[in-house]
Image (tube, rainbow, N blue to C red; front, side, top):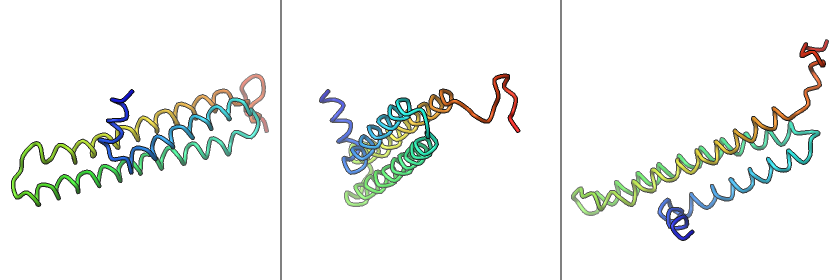
Amino acid sequence: MSALFDKFNDGGPFFTYPLLILMIVVIILIVQGFIKQNGNGKIIALIASLSWFAVAWGFLGRTAGLIMAFDNVSAQGELTPRLLAGGLKMAILNPLFAFIVFLIARAGIILLIWMKKNEAFDEKGKLKE
């Protein structure tokens, strides 16, 4: 469990912990959508918005990690793998975690839409007029 928190800290706590909170909120909303069968449209829209926000936040973390890596190189004056490691790790971990949050949210949306009773179609699958 401590290795997981080490990865969160390697990715930069400012970026990874909000992504963790977003993932928890998305999971809660998915569960709420399954419990509350009526009116899932708002929940689905909220999950979709949060999933895209997670992707944007992860890429913001990637950009910050790359800037940090290049700042370290410019401050030292020479390029060594050790100097780049911290920034590149941050640049890789944040989008990865953001994509995990995105995939969980999108899978939840797919399941909620699949489980949703669609009033626009009749029992034969034809569009109601």
